[in-house]
Image (cartoon, rainbow, N blue to C red; front, side, top):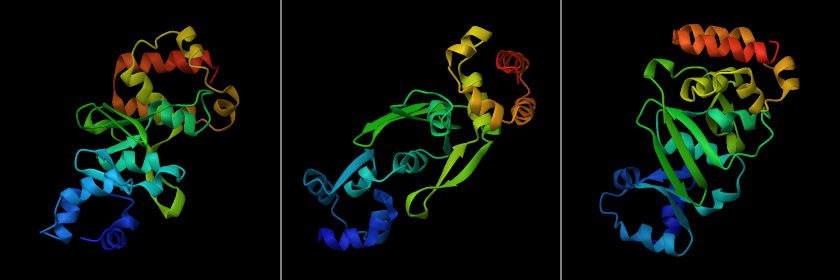
Length: 205
């Protein structure tokens, strides 16, 4: 198969799974993927998933691929906090939450980390537009905080929350503390509720 024919069919997908290829061409020779990968035309995101190298330099496509290669999931935790400018650090890993088992993948795009939460806690994300009119699932600022406290219970004192170095200006201007408390009530975990109260107290929210 000619690469240009393949690219014409799949380039607009950005990333693709081997099953999509076989649905298009049942007799497809998988060795083509190895050959095209070695030539630098495509790269592997995880087993069975590939993307075109042109997308390596496109903004926010790491988030888009994170949603695609391990679903259901949405961007949250440190990646979401950094996206909103709530923490000063740049985040190397693309951090997501999922109702599947925890997983980690490393590829040319970066490191992808997925942490498990219960299926009934898979809420509190928005659909955000990125480059080329793609849509990503991204936690709201309030849900990113709740997910962080849910998954990392060692944050349990005012000093711990100060150490997160969350931007105070953002908290006072763009953060909805009532929404965070509403989310907490939906989770219905007394220990989590107590730590959220400490978080709110620490930042005078």
